[in-house]
Image 1 (spheres, rainbow, N blue to C red):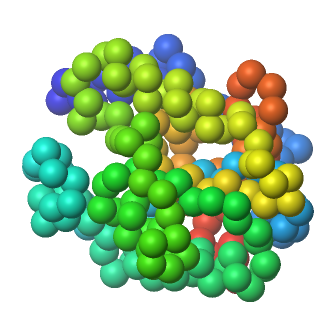
Image 2 (cartoon, rainbow, N blue to C red):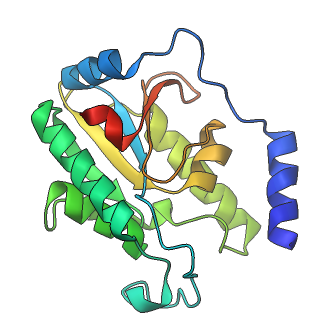
Length: 198
């Protein structure tokens, strides 16, 4: 209950961004992604909501975390196939250390194709306020930093609350928010669902 109240307070202070009327429709957004130079933020695929994160002291213990369900695994396959079918170039893939994020990356992009980043850790379980802010600041920095290769994209497999606090954008499990880097604040240019890759 306390966590829900805190989320409501956060949303009052930092209202969610509305994707602007000139944001790209899925087909145009996929074409833009083919050109590279973007930061692609993918909220991990759908999870089994009957599970909870009960012990995060050892992040390799997937059995004590909320994990992907069958629908989520299907979403991850669609995303990976979509990147292949649309020839979307990827410079690197960064993921939160949670099993649901790593599994999303693994199913979509293959074994050991990603880099686990502690600064993408999910915000809600973190009790230290300074560390929470450090996580938000780190994500903001990722979202405004262009790929080293301007013809490729950086993919981040992250969490919802982190994105809400860093960019005031909310996406559902499995959805993708695409950012054009540069400037001081993250700028979202469109949102995709896994089905948009068809």
